[in-house]
Length: 401
Image (cartoon, rainbow, N blue to C red; front, side, top):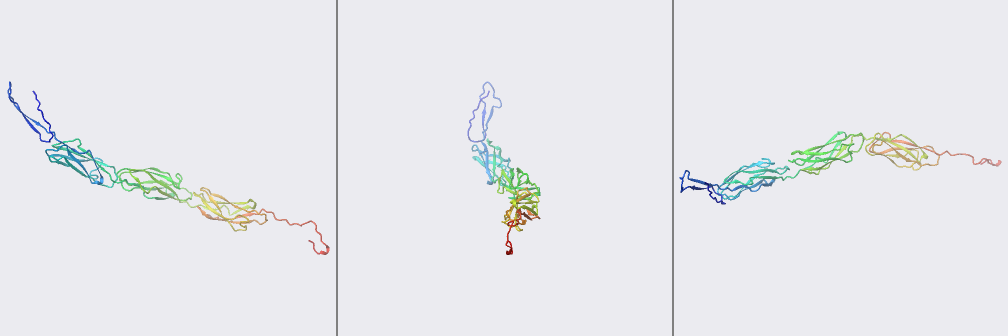
């Protein structure tokens, strides 16, 4: 046969307690052995646990404090072990390892675990480690026996920018390299886009367009952009290319952006000179055409003045005076300028105008910088004749008119 012994649950934490049971007054049987038994009432120990499943502190705070609590005040001493384990945070670098035992005296309900965290200058993601309770005595673990401790980073993101605001490279260098720098190292990967853009230089003819993404691994602070430069045989002004950074990830753009690359021309200036030392024009043609030539095509506009003056012809009587500018567009090697002639009705000898080149821009003066224009007279010589076919004079007059 079995029988039930009612047990009453009470609130206080206490030692296990016993009840003695004894058989007696047997009828129809003899009492056997054992005739006594002990029932032990096992106390349901209080819970010990961490007060919260998550804690956080900024990196510069120095410590994170976690609270460990009892569900009820214990009537006897309670102990529980604690330990730390790394998550994304690294022991020694991000926090100081800590293990130990918390002891609750009777009546105590809270203890604190204080963990030292390390401050650094690295921009990084928030990092975590775990606090865990184990091996309780005179208590049992509650539902929150471990907690995530988050170290909140307090370092600003680095800036990313070019090392210099301007770069130069000779046209025949083939390529140039521009360094891109982080202001400080980061523990996070950083990316930034780069691209070239035409300034006065033209992609495809002066340089090769480039674009892409630079990747800085954690700890890296420098990456390089290489630009290929195209050489030509044209004399031209120094030309520029813009280098532009954009779309940074885990960083911000610095002040040195964009940067300018100047491609230094290495081609000799062409020579500009008259197409001939002698030009001829008829007075009646109203103008004279004078050729001016370049020794080689240029990559920029070239100008030079043709100045008439001197010779036997007279300015404003035989021609219109003043400088005439010849202008060569890029790639052109010959130009013609027009000297306006003034036609008159006088029979005269052919006249000459001296021509001189000056004020060359984008080119150097060549060997043939002076010449002569001959203006050919188109007027017939005058006639001479008697005023009439017959004349009379008296014999005694002595002369006849």
